[in-house]
Amino acid sequence: MRDRGSAGHPAPSRAASAPAIGALLPGTLARLGLAEGIARWRAVVEWDAIVGEALACSTKARRIEGDTLVVETTDMFGMSHFKPGLLKLVRDHIGSELIRDIRLELKRN
Image (cartoon, rainbow, N blue to C red; front, side):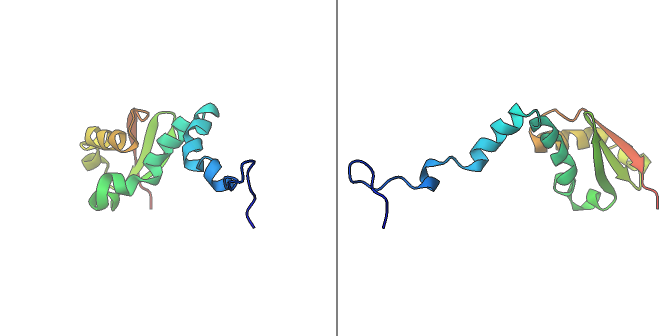
């Protein structure tokens, strides 16, 4: 049997009165000082979706160092020409300019 409120109406369910975690998470992350780091890390985690299949075959986002995204590549010369465009793709994808540079590193076998 359902609990009844003071006027004989059903008491609101806990799920109906509690805000969704998705609504609370951004504010909580910002208060903890983690929001920008997570936004930057999305560039690493979502690299393949950002650059597409063709570039993902020859590149791999490895880490964030400050406001720089470090990308491993098999073609340093060719990829150096794409850096401005890659930076724009990353910024558009994460929705901010938290990434200010991309540093290329040669993939070692």
